Length: 81
Image (cartoon, rainbow, N blue to C red; front, side, top):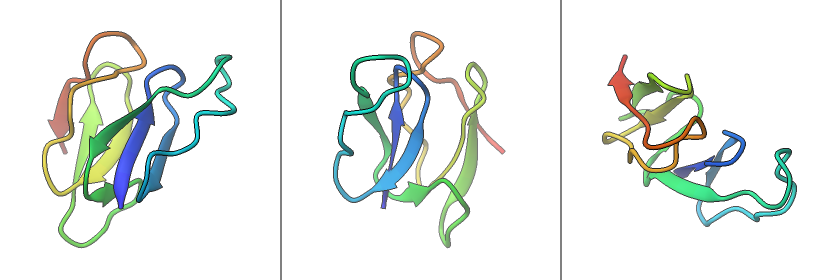
């Protein structure tokens, strides 16, 4: 599954398709960014842990996640743990 991060509130979900935008706790709708095409919010075979130095989100991806859409502003700064 792919990993999506809301750039508004920082919610992280696993999904095969772009999640629905309704229900963002920051108001309005979620603004989902696909962080990586194959991974999860828990460890999976073939994935590695990455943590954003700015917002602290940790995800597990098979490749380096995209830097786009950090909820703290600008882009994520991913560190491979």
